[in-house]
Length: 125
Picture (cartoon, rainbow, N blue to C red):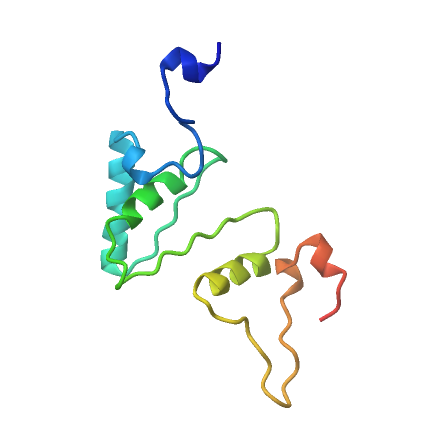
């Protein structure tokens, strides 16, 4: 017997694409969301850290539903094992911005070696 049958679930309860309306309103979800929105209203930075699968993106997705879509553009950035340059590319793509391009006569921009993944560090700038 599967856990879905045992608990009487109609849908997969732990999927990444669960609708925000289907979130179980745990007190921690509301508290984390409120802290994020408070920092946003102050114009401050806010970071949520934790182990894989600990529920970092859930309160952010919940908080994002409280933001007016004409005032805010929410961009999801997944920090994987890739380089810092990949994270910066995700941010640029989320805002429909091309990465830095050199001006005529200036050298090509180079990502610092410490930001590169082992795969990227083999390619010269």
